[in-house]
Image 1 (cartoon, rainbow, N blue to C red):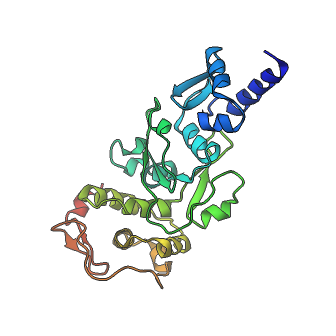
Image 2: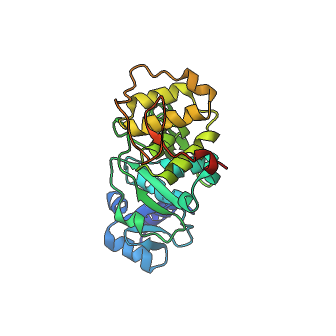
Image 3: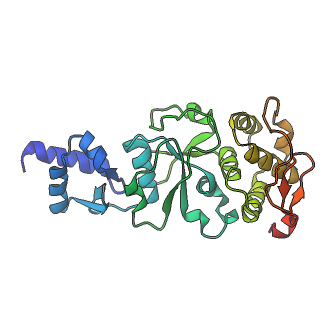
Length: 273
């Protein structure tokens, strides 16, 4: 192997480290042709855990590697939100059994097919743009943290990498979850999570409510926050927040909330552990 080609290989292996994953598209943009990548695989330097994805032969495939590949390598506006973001923030034990292993991704970009075929315990689910009217943000490491926080996003830094993963803050993740198709099990789950949301930031909650397009999500969020008498709710400004008009039947045959005019399961207390 020539010095130039060896230097190119070493540069790639240094970029990959022990846990990083890159796509074939990213490799082509960096000057690694398909034939050269195939040669690296044949020589035992790289492995392909799925068609279109590559890592070092000794590398450890992790869900964090996939998210970094999407956000940084691919430059896709996809953030971790909803249930999985709440699990990252320490609320995994409030989620329905098995749901915490689904990495929920929100954003304007579609999930590449290679990300859905990986041999991982976790699997990836694209949940659409979500209920907010924010423009799609860039998620690369150079974006200031405050720019992300202004949209209810934050970086979580796994111990095995200095590169943070962009995910929803608890405030945004709760509204994303409230936007799911309403069923009694969903309301039970959101209610259990809301009981634990004792330290949400009222200014951020108010900002997100203003930017949330889902009447259903806003009413459910506020009704359950009121139900648990959270102190922060008194400091949330609802001036200008569109809560719609009229009654909304979330749960057929449920109990109508007197303030937010949505039906909630009549047996909520029985399902609260």
